Image 1: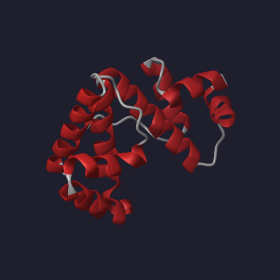
Image 2 (image 1 turned 60 degrees about the horizontal axis):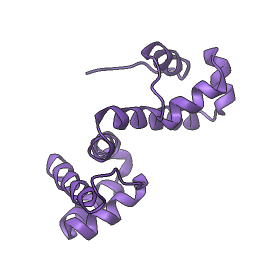
Image 3 (image 1 turned 120 degrees about the vertical axis):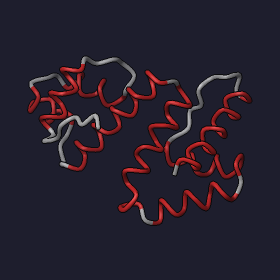
Image 4 (image 1 turned 135 degrees about the vertical axis):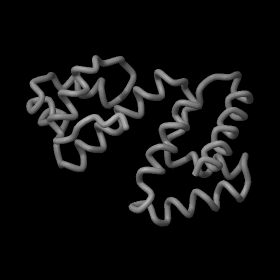
Length: 141
């Protein structure tokens, strides 16, 4: 997994060079296609191994997504986007709307939207409140 991450990060760095060192607007599902073009069949093969058995490799895919986000947009913004996507994913899996989650948290829907889109910094207390309302906890290990 570490080798795949390095290969993909190298691809992102090449794309950024071609794009004037600006972050790329690539949705997660397109990373494999772009890495194939820049990194060759080895990357495509390794991606396929993970995606073909996605349920058993969810942790690795999640970590890979985080690393690629950070490589693309930088650590602060990458982590905000990653956390927002995870919140949206957990909310969706529980069948909740943003408004329903907001009500469970005692927050506005705008707070939830901002947290999920990852474009605004939110306080750690707000993140903990949202995660707790989703029945999860933050684990730093």
